[in-house]
Image (cartoon, rainbow, N blue to C red; front, side, top):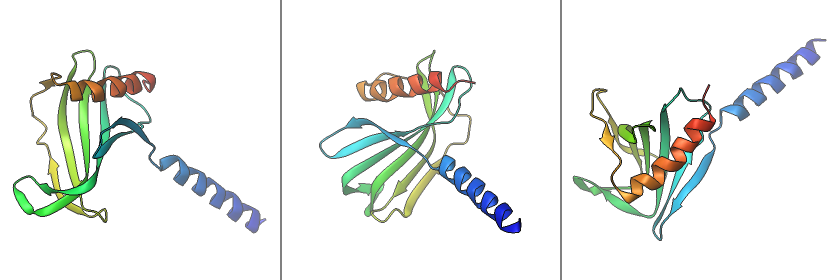
Length: 136
């Protein structure tokens, strides 16, 4: 009986761990990088928080610190789909081995930016489709 309970507990824990793994979806491909979006589990109405990951083919210098290189940039954007606005809430720069070399966290009172660039449109559209699909 104890063995059966132990197996059930392990099976439930393994299932929960599998559900928590993130799923990245490719959004855009450049010659020197790819941009992926992490699939979210749920969203609330017109607003969502979406994580984008840009992986560069070659390391690049960190802005303002040319002696520090990063290869991956992970950005959390807050998005208001109906208004077509966004703001950066967090950013994490990772080196070739996946170690953080720099991070940014917004204060929380930043202004919303209107989507104006072609690249932001390419990110906003799939993000808003996902937000709409995952609404509770």
